[in-house]
Image 1 (cartoon, rainbow, N blue to C red):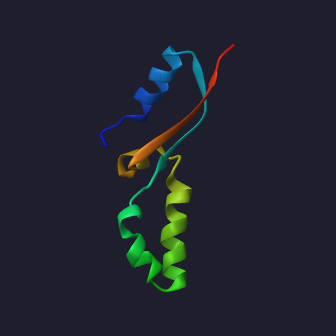
Image 2 (cartoon, helix red, strand yellow):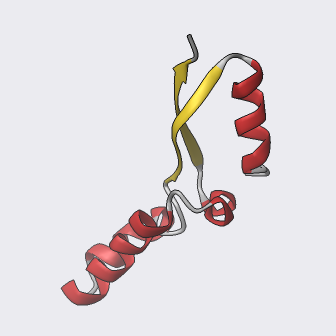
Length: 75
């Protein structure tokens, strides 16, 4: 994905939305789920927790298959 988080904010801002949340989905662990499921529990848990901690970091968006924008229409 080629995305600049600042462009997402400005795009929805022009449409009259404010941003309660924007986060990346299906990060770098997505293609490795089978490997992680067969890994020792400690390793699997670490690699499954990591995207949760990074998903709202704009630098992580490039590693995400999808971005989820949750917007609220300004009144």
